[in-house]
Image 1 (cartoon, rainbow, N blue to C red):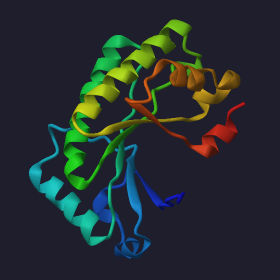
Image 2: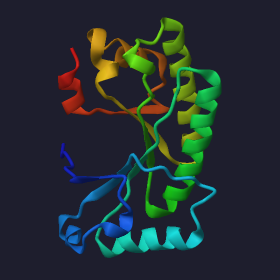
Image 3: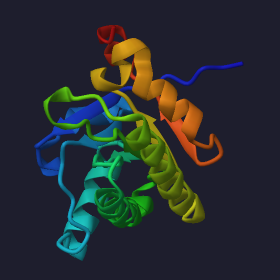
Image 4: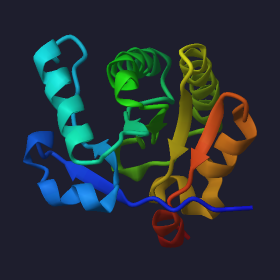
Length: 178
């Protein structure tokens, strides 16, 4: 089989309007990371400008990052609401997936077994809601999921339905775990 290689540009706290024209030759994908998109406050003219800039620079937006707490029921419900709102905004730009890295607990405290089970349920719920919109939930990892023998990552694999939740593996973060 063939493996598709794509360049990825991460835009951290940087307005999309500042992207240089030279990126058109890269045929890069764009992952808006660390950007807060409030669905209620993104006016139609900014949506149109974003789409114009993506197309004029030869960029596409196959996914959008939406973080949030997933191991507490109320917070996970808020994360899901935010993710669905952002997905609806990004879908017209060709976005087919929401990448989520469930937030760690404060001070990198490990989640309890019960919190990990709940997190899996909440990820499945979000994945199902996205699937109903024709989109995909992709779980991303950082170091906290890979510590203690990849305890949290293994739990995610065990407690989520692969028909609802895909993995967006970050090899660099995997190598930084223990």
